[in-house]
Image 1 (spheres, rainbow, N blue to C red):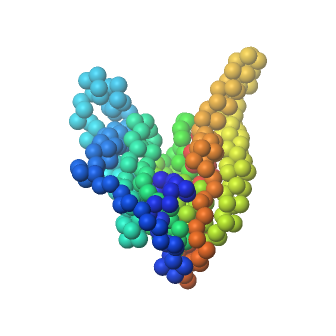
Image 2 (image 1 turned 90 degrees about the vertical axis):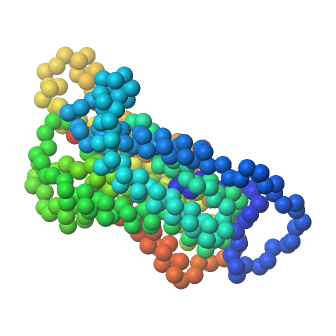
Image 3 (image 1 turned 30 degrees about the vertical axis):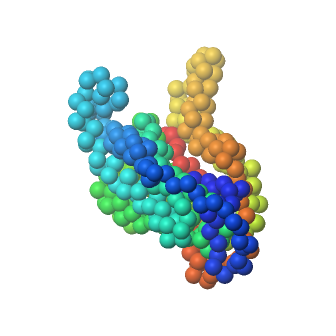
Length: 358
């Protein structure tokens, strides 16, 4: 994901070659660092992300057979070498994220937009082990054509890796009877189609239990869906602004102010209804206080499982839902097709319920 740009920073703005020339202003050249670019933070964060993704991958790879929690690994209760078993999840996931971020980076470099290498964000918790990555871009992109190229390059590059990874993983996944309680990954049109093509019809009461590679591929779809939200300076915000101009800000206000709260409320209701339906026989006949406590626990669990849309509602309040303006210009026909295709891809990837309980 490309980090939000500063709309007030006039430095190094990228202009459309067909737009009128800007007035020439005299300025001093920026002071160059004698030590050159500093990549140590990028490397440290990437190394930490590799470690956290490998650890989460080990959880998916060995299941309950071995305790590969950080507590067990750091205390010596489990051999740290078990973390290497996580490569089967970590390598494909990191490949998808690298493709996404370097798609942005290469497009930015082609258009002479000053961009940093990716800053990966480690997260030492399941289900992914990372919160993705960002690229820092200095200056304001004033051309809608360049904005489209930089915004769309990341999702398209990431999907070029995610789809083959997911297909391979689904071909090596198993269809089993669903028993007990657990978490269900989100469904989208593209994911449903790929499951149908690779696994075939799924009997009632059964589901596809994902191979770690398939989980990495699904995560690639999930991350791309997030980035294609047509809000603010997410990739989807860049693409929608390049296509619609100022009208994109109205769309972003609608998405943030109405769609995200409704999605959160609907998901809480659905997860709560599933929990009640599953545990109804246990609730019947219980004392009132016990039933009330159990109901509150179910509500809390449903809210936690549905927190994704609430988290993004809060985040967008801070990072902003509007997009900074560009110079008056229009997209070329090829770029218009790319922009429309990117928004269609968002529809195919949209997961109303990213995670659910059963």
